[in-house]
Amino acid sequence: MTTITAHITRADQSKSPYFYIPFDVPAGTTRIDVTLAYPKADDCVIDLGAFDPRDTGYPAAEGFRGWSGGARDRYFIATDDATPGYIHGEIQPGTWNVILGLYKVPEAGADVTVTITLDSSPRILEPQPARTFPVRQGAGWYKGDLHCHTFHSDARGAPETLHRAARQAGLDFLAIADHNTVTQRRYFHPQSSPDLVFIRAMEVTTAEGHANVYGVDEWIDFRMTRPSDAHTLARMVHDKGGLLSINHDKPPIAWDYELPEADCQEVWQSTWLAWNWIALDKWQARLASGLRLSAIGGSDFHQPVDLQPEGPLVLARPTTVLWLPELSEDAVLTAMKSGHGYVTESPNGPHLEIDAHGTPMGGTIETISSVSVTARGAAGEILSLIDASGEIARIEITNADWQTEIPVTPETFIRAEIIASETTRAMMLAEFAALLEGRELPWQLRNVDLRDQPIRRALSNPIYVGRPASTE
Image (cartoon, rainbow, N blue to C red; front, side, top):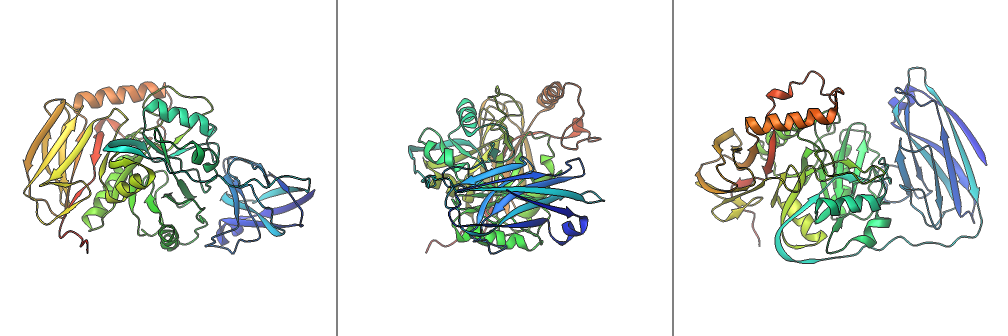
């Protein structure tokens, strides 16, 4: 057993948000146990992780052995098993590092104690789980949640419980984006099936912003320290064939890095009332500037220990709905990137589809003189059509299975929203107030007048105006 102490100051935090405590691991070691002790308080929060000798510093391709953020104060890594969030396997001899994330450091600093225990008892070398490739045949609309968490990061619930929640919600696909780690694949790789396809994901999580990585099996280095590191992040993701999405660009955790070459933006996270109008405004401005950035949604649901009943603040609120030629991970990723889909409030939320002269959402057409709109389950609500200049049409949806052709000549793009009527909005606000049970508003919403805030029930992806990209 080795005990290492350090006094961490705000000067350390200003130098780097990451603080490394090295320790030596001899050959033959089969298990490492680490415990962190510090005076945790509202102004003192320190995250925890591990790197092995292969780490080269940011941006590293190898050497990551786990991250638990502020959710744990101890972990173990062995050849055959590891704490959730940490990667089991070969224990390389050499200099390892306990990495501390300096999220909050008090003015007086903080004394930290790290205790390390090494063990060389015989253990098997357990391989990492192999990715599976389930496919459900048949073209159509498929429903999923693209942002949720298990106890492999900061949720309390097991992957098995989240799996049950996804089935309860009637989802077809699910992306489990645990913070800064990919160890949730231990469960989700072998459990992915044609009934419920699991999408590989990881949430890059820092104090300056969050982003989801999709379709990459390997860990992606999250240790960004400069605004320009966002471009390094995008390059790492795209070099591995993945997609990058900017998460919840709104209070309380907006994106404060430079805007990288992202594929998607999480325009809707959790209930609409959680500042999502700000994320929507930022997406609208980016589209108006000429960017082509697909809209997706995710609940950011942190699975509790027990399965929760269906309701407005659980998994798949909102739901991303994609048109797929088949249900598979590759098809989901392709549709996410192309924007061939929409985001709706829940698995049973309104359906919203737009088409311009045969060009679907996410497509490009040289000119538009009208747009075809299909809305289901939204009778009495308001359809809004928006281009680069703002709203260009507003129409009441008159029945539950509504289709119409609307003459328009949009600038740059056209997209659609279903907005709750006054009656529906009053009902939704009453439901939200009942959930709070007299508690103050969450998400730093104090002094925000939600009564005057339009509530979106569904958002389409754009159809772009311009010359379609060459297929040659």
